Structure formats: structure tokens, C-alpha cells
Image (cartoon, rainbow, N blue to C red; front, side):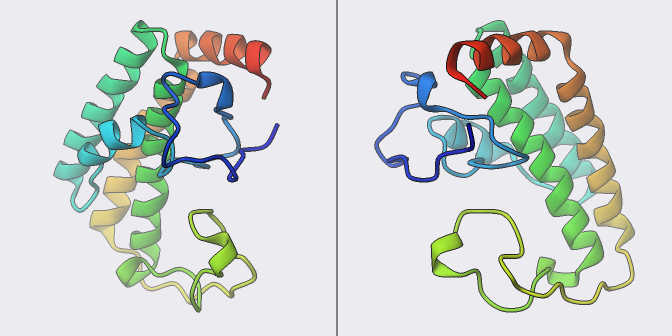
Length: 163
């Protein structure tokens, strides 16, 4: 089942209602699903490699803690924040200022990833600082995806609640 953007994210506690959560694709819902957004977002930073290292380690520690607590939704959200650390740092490595697409996000697509019909802006010369920050996040994201307990809990979650 695809990620459902029509849920009442302002009033839904996904720790209490994991059955409403969908893994979706990529980073879907990363800035919507509570209480996890509020628990993880304060630690998410990628400005420099040093900041990215500290951030990715803290988020990875949260990922492992959620798994130990058998809280798959939390673990998956931490995985999404690691992924988003990589993708955002890469965006800033390729596009000064981080603006990838020409024009504003359409009103009906706010909060969703993608071009939404907008053209990609030309890439700037790669920023090596942001590229290194991206590499750091990618390493943690790959480790999270490959983590055996994550894979087990994901399979159990999808069997119980659907994909």
C-alpha cells in the first residue's frame, strides 16, 4: 500500500497507531510522522562533515534503540532521516543553495518529494564539503538498510499491516 498523505498527521500518534503507518518509497512522510519527527529532527544536520558525522551517529543510535524497543515505525523513520541526510547533502553538493528545481512546489504537492513537473536547474561545480557530508550519511543509511533486525522487523510489520 502506498504512503497515505491524507491521514490527519497533526493529531495521529504513530507510536500508538502503527497500523496507520506505511513504509512507502524513499523518504515519504519523513517530516510528517509523529512523535518520531519531533524526536529525530533536532539531531538532523549536514552542514559540514563533522556535523554530519555527529548527526548520523546520533540518528543511527536512535535507529538501534527503536529496534531494541521493537518499534519498527521509529526505526524506519530514523532510516528515512539517514536517507534524507544523504539526499539533501547531495543536493547541496550539486546545487548551491540547495534549490534543485525551477519554480515553487505546487500547492497540492507540498510535503512530497519530487520534481512535480518542474525542470531541474543546472548543477554547480560539486561542493566537496557537502559531498563528504553526503558520503557519511550514505554509509549510515546503507548500514541501517542492511541491519538484520531491521529487515526482520520490516518483514513482520509488512506482513501484519501491509506494505
